[in-house]
Length: 209
Ligand SMILES: [Zn+2]
Image (cartoon, rainbow, N blue to C red):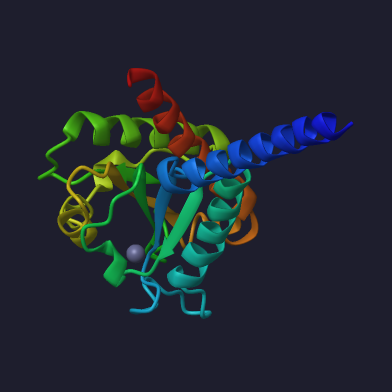
């Protein structure tokens, strides 16, 4: 009886130590994959505005929060970052995407995606950009507007600040006037386009490694 008790005790100790060891291993060595989302203009200015008071920063925030919660649901850690967040300095993650929306001028519609012109990982950045073009278009049925990609997008400040090995892109989600219905009323659609674009890229890069 005594030896049986000690065997049970030994077994329980081994199970406990192994469990604790695995937890410690996961805590210290297995990093939860992380994605950064910049909420365009947040804590800096309102961005584009319409005469009736609709503000780009509010659109960006609502969509960014929906993007973050969807990414968290599928197992990613997400940093929601302000426009000039101090965390952007040397920021390291699987991907960084900055969300913006475009002017309230009548007559303009569509979305556009760009990467930094000075990127040192152009193939990875292009893969991220291509995935977002495809999936955002599928989710929103908005037209591509590549002709209006600006130098401000290509030389976006955060591209120069983050760790240069972090794949990154900026998206203009639509125009505040003509695309208002989509941007203002359907954050689920826009967010799913961004999320599926990011996941497409992450799955492709995971396959390469
Ligand atoms: Zn903006």
